[in-house]
Length: 190
Length: 190
DNA sequence: CTAATTTGCCTAAAGGTTTTAGGCAAATGC
DNA sequence: GCATTTGCCTAAAACCTTTAGGCAAATTAG
Image (cartoon, rainbow over all chains, first blue to last red; front, top):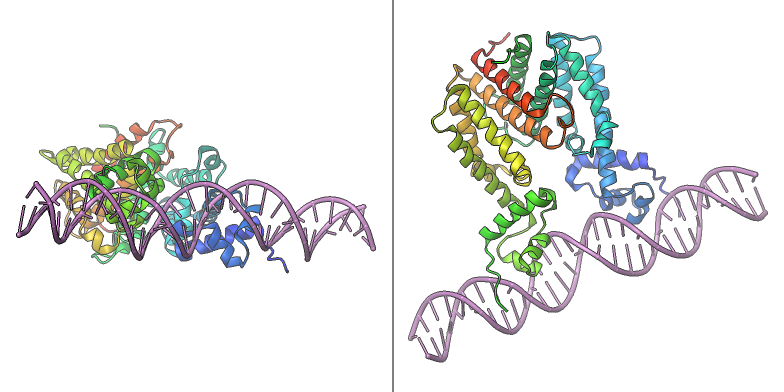
């Protein structure tokens, strides 16, 4: 019988596509095996476990996101950079909901430390350098931006803002306006 | 043989406890049956499916959250209300991570419309009445607050902020300061 | 206080996913 | 061409979900 040409790389890539099609939670070793027309057990030579597969998909998504964010940031600063960066998250989540869900997977600390997550944090900090924040406020702001981006995209994806006026795009624009204004005028402790 | 005294109510309540102990994703009909020392099939008289069980746990969590938020809001206004409301989310998520994860479950539109989710939205709007926002800015602000609360709590829960200075409590306080300042000074469209 | 009915939990069974173990054949290297 | 490595296979055990049908306990009615 001819071989299917499996590899960890191909499996993870196909898993990411599967996630976008059927949802990250429905990505299973079985479903992936069906997609390659191969016995389930065969995948276990390339992937340690179901959890391992999911983690690898998450890492792939984080890399893709970081790459796009880096592209978007090139040559931009200030509000321009802020908006471009934020749009990368939102656009990616809308175009690749399964991958985005994967990127939100809880990773154990060591895996997270070795992931593209650190690039995300560095880029957020780079954006904030366009505003006049000093430590520890810059860190507070990093956390706030991460929260808003992830939170907004998550709520939007779960349908929280659909079918009600004004449309989500308008709120997104105004929320970014507001964040820019806030960063330009970060309050001192009360 | 004596009966175990199952009921939908008791199952959902036990399911919520189980979620806090082992994580919402690990809540299964089987695990719940073990907890009651009862055959798995017996649960299906009280709960339609695994999905149904999870949805009911989510609805319970949303109710509990809304109840606490309503208590916290009583007699407060302005920043006081904002902080109390936000703390309810964060404290609940830290005390009941499984239930909180359940509350973030994607519900189908009709279920969501009948859930306590609408109370949450109403309370957020009530808080914003302490600031001088008019439509559609109030709606934008509702969405932004929801995003920050959910986003922050989610990131904190997944360990995003741990083991790095400054500690998460400080960032939380300063983020709420910042939100208050922003709402008092909401920017007009550029 | 029985008798009828309802209700609650049980056994049985089928179908799906995960994971390990061991085997044969195809690809690779000498 | 032969040996070794690698890739995918069959087999099988363990666990979760869900449906069907049955018996006994609890509830209601006469």
